[in-house]
Length: 390
Image (cartoon, rainbow, N blue to C red):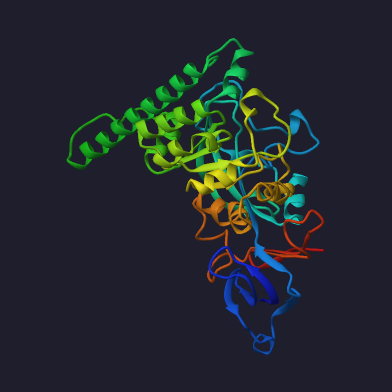
């Protein structure tokens, strides 16, 4: 049991910038308000000294653990560049809990990450959602397979052009994605017809099992997709295909999304924005801007902000967020983009992303304003336990 006293709470819910006490027990938040430590004699009492207290940061898109820092090829398991369509792959199987990036992220207040395959392939496999502390991936897991990664734009065509293999154009990337989805839809329909025939007593042959197609067919049963798209045209292609097949999910990066806000709003596009810190490392990033978040918010487009670790280290998530605030994004909305909104767009907001009664006790006590570059956590609590102390 932990009792946090005198917290300047930014809960990302209904209590923001108010001095309160927080009781943590059995891994979750139990009470928020004015609490007397004499009523909780068994609790570890932490005096926040009116410093800011927030939920743990949620990184909604990164590759932490799949590219182990300082290793090179032996530690890189992010892209299987032998086939542009690999829905059967699971990021969960490639995570290295001993990657020092997890420790650094935790020390910086990042408590939850959504990590998985890169964007070399048109379909790359599934993302996984983890806490940033634990000895094995099983200790860390929140959702084993949270979404199916897909990609359009420069990356797939660049990778397979070097192999003189399709896709070498945006047309081919879209065609391969459609072909795979059509096969998966047909496969699912055959499976459903077989099960219906069995129910009514028909003597029918069971359809042949296909692991690749079976894996992809889950997107028609509710598994969200996340489609890598930077440029306006790639965003529109991604949305077109999502609507053609009735898919639910997000546009990843959405670098030029702020330039087509009317379209984004009309089609109810949800974006995981970034990474925006750093150089324009390729042509499709030429319109990258820290104004993007402000513009998306003003146009009522739902978004979160990613690091895309290791492009930006997860440990520097708030450094990037501060630059969005500098360019006009309201502070509380900026915090939400890496907490509750990041959780919502990954369908884990019932557990993390805000400090509310009943949710996971993932809490950060900062030693100053969280967006100041000199600030760091004094305590990081994960699942109701002190995971890091300064």
